[in-house]
Length: 260
Ligand code: PGA
Image 1 (cartoon, rainbow, N blue to C red):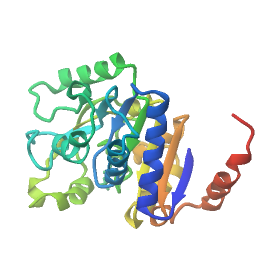
Image 2: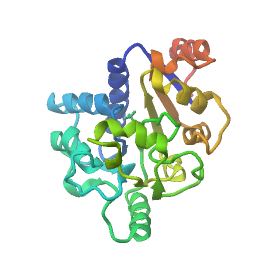
Image 3: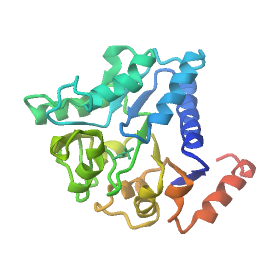
């Protein structure tokens, strides 16, 4: 894992967006794994800016979102379909048929989940996966205890996640209890991964994910097994990392390293 500490969430968003842009410049028909939540919003805003300036074309891009709440119609303001449409898809030029988001309203979850996995394979796998992290250390909705080789499936949300996400709903009781989510095993197959976190509330989860043991109690820790993950954090989210000085040293010395 490479840890890149940025001064502000805005710096983090710009750096992560640059990374997405590099992938698309090298491979215009790349497959992107998309995340929802407040953390990746800044990255989407940066990508939209680049697109509007004519510097980034999404017309050959395919996307797969990580997860969706079960039971919310796609038009519900808090559905991840709606979030992605409002904050990204309506603002760039990805063909509608190239956009994939798990269904939270299918009548057959096992069949849908199997189809989603198959569709990712048919599209050649995910080139770059964007991830946030929950305060309980989850990636996507892979809550503590999720198998580290899990695939797309239905999950029961942890109470902490319901509490964390209640801020987006009128009442806590309105937060869905179930979600459909890519598994940890699905995520680990992405060729490159960027994990984003900002704010002091994420400091414990980031420290556990990056420096703790690999454990299903913190599903983000499974990223330690992935060959190409970069972790973008702002100062407060980095505040509990013990090896912080070393991460900064690596970034400082990287330009002088022989080509890998
Ligand atoms: P957040 O959610 O970006 O809204 O903090 C992150 C997550 O739960 O993955």
